[in-house]
Length: 289
Image (cartoon, rainbow, N blue to C red; front, side, top):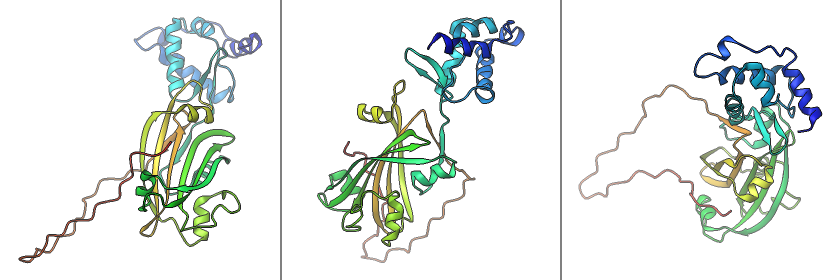
């Protein structure tokens, strides 16, 4: 961090350099006062990319140790409010994108949140479906599929690396003019309306390639999703995505639990085979990377 940047940040924080006493000195959680002060500073005075006050100025202002100050800063870094830049300092982070779990595209959800979506195509090809993809699409291994890999952005900030597979026989001309802005919209135009789906969410460390594409320098945590999209009874798309753990959160609406309705089965007649209930679809655990 340059001397000028640090001096400006210290000046904003410490125009009144009188030590804060009372609540900030008492109790086992002095860092809460520092954290509350920094959080308020972020929402009222600082903008994305601005440096926060130095640890030295905060220790003097609140009369606490540097360890306490670092604890407060760590908490806000974990929450995605602040971000550290190696060798430069700590800055206000871009806001998280809070997306609701719905059968929509990244672009649709970004626009609903007032963000401008973007996409960079990293790969576009036709290839034989590997086993996990074929299983997800209910096809034979080796079935030709369209394969698209894109870097998705919100307001210009990298958010996710998204990989999609669509059977070629469902939409042979899908990629003739390049990758459509919306794969869902392109499927609808061909009479393949995505009507429902199932999604698996996991947490993991990003691969070196993902971390580079997502410009993640201080964190390795990503949220992975695997989604099967259906049009009627047929799987029309299988997709996997890795989202920045420090820039992405999921909103899941909940409601009061209700009794599950289970149809009664007709008693089997003597000598008849006992029917078995159909098994729900399963998202394959493995996937090519």
